[in-house]
Length: 147
Image 1 (cartoon, rainbow, N blue to C red):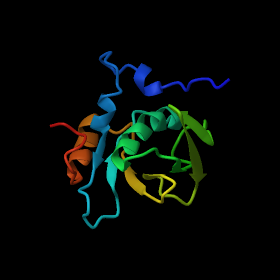
Image 2: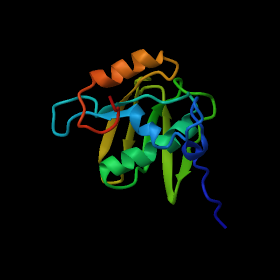
Image 3: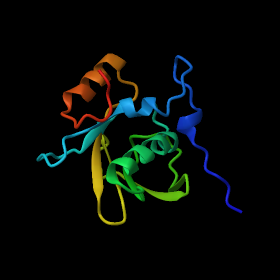
């Protein structure tokens, strides 16, 4: 019998008590499609708890890619010590690869068909005004970060 995955994003209240699932969209900005760019967007996680943050991020990236994310590559030193190799997100299994060679300020998420996105990771402990400024500084395609 398979146990359902815990959706940390749906249960995690924000500082004002609001459920954060919709608010996580405001922490992700996509660069314009088709533009010459090194990064596909920027993401401001709420903490350094990789499992909880990736559980919140994967559905948003899956929606953007048009199908489920299957793999996440992340820097091993940039996150808390709880570093799972796999996460169940809904009905999907996501594999996490932990590397020291990946820039600690990025995370890469991909599908089996080689569709990948690389996101700039804005430090979770950054002053909120500065973090939002960094998100707004990235040209985006209208998704995420409301004014």
